Figure 1: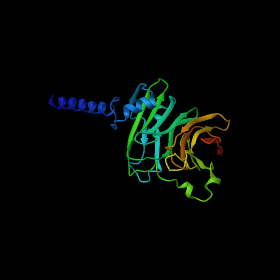
Figure 2: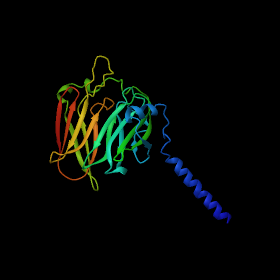
Figure 3: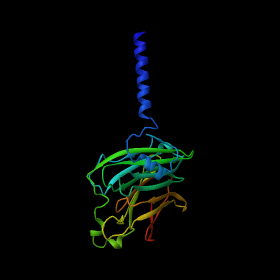
Figure 4: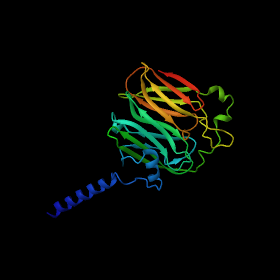
Length: 253
């Protein structure tokens, strides 16, 4: 009987610990800014902190101008309407507004700037109107948003604006598309250089049907890198537009 009681107690403790680990109301990376961003980004809409929304970033940003970030909401495949991401303590917090449509999984990789150590958030809106918020912390020496552009120091950079390098790599039941776009992505925080950045992107399939739409913000790094998971075969097209009205179009086999 004692052994049975011990087992029952252990099971109860285990369940309690699990419940605490997935408490939908408890911020996994406590931040004094959460209430502000809940209102600013999500309009005070219903939400849960959800560990199924995965944010992968290095624990420390070795280069605060080029920080890799992966947003994985594939646990909600087929049910995702929109994904928003932001860095709470950046002077320009917004990163991306991503709408995966038919044929694209709710997964995105991107490189960003961070100005200092900050919580990173990704909020996934599902068809039931609920936001699922994933979180992580990143440490940084700082200055990624206010550092001068490296692109602008390279000879002939103006002639390469909009060039797209990339490829498509088969996986088990999808393929991963990775691209890099030549662009300084100026955020307006360096003296004498106004905002000049890619603010819209659209991915289309071989039949010119939209696969995904993105709105990009100045927190995205210069020469932005993007990654998508695509179901099905055939050529894809990436259409881009910057805030000066320049438009770019690249075909990716």
